[in-house]
Image (cartoon, rainbow, N blue to C red; front, side):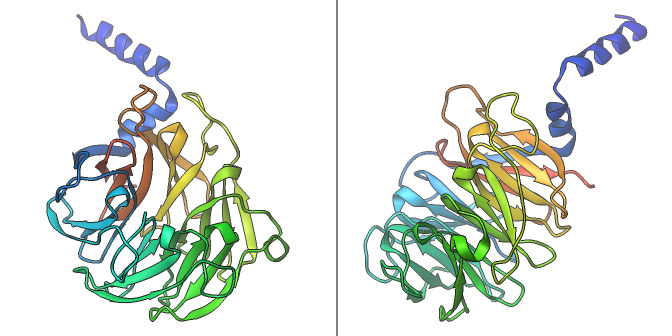
Length: 314
């Protein structure tokens, strides 16, 4: 093939590839994956949310094994804790995870309707919550996040509100009724803190993202429903996890579109990429997402895997 023919061939390929695929290839690179289905150390059963600490350790909510697993940045198993139950340090389908400035680990113990606090090596410290509607009571808590002041925001999913706690798990306040925020949340799922200090939340069944002040005033909403291989950029099919990079970029797992979408700090669409197994009927669902030291980690709920991506420099 001559040089001119090669150039024509490359141009033809570029013209037929979707823009999202081209951008995905130039923006991120899959650099590794680990775990498989099972209940042994380093194996997972339907992982949900994930988080990284300041030392770049990765904590994974291993939901159907009712435990937390800790890995280093390259996927080497470090430790794990928890088992099914209701006692202190036990879990019943845990879901969310967050880490405070001192490295303590907080887990939303979803079906026990509580939040538990641990050291980085899994030693139980405290808990808050029981089933109910009063302050510090919960109905199936989901995602959690800390702000710069170490205030913990917890999605109290079936009370359709956010509860705020300090690091001792003492109640501070709550917000989230339709009257107070001006919209009806429908299965709020995951939460993060933006670079400017606002709270960003995936409003799952409304297929959109909502941004609030720390006291619950609605700032903006973006996104709407679209699903399939040709789903429009900036649209969602059940968005789940949200993470915010150091530069303010927001990454969202767009579950039933099998992709990750990237937005800038002003919530303008930037990029997207499809996760392994997309649209091949293998039921790979990107769910949890975390960022640390230029690396994006994705927990695939049905593949029982963690995927590691390297971000290209902006």
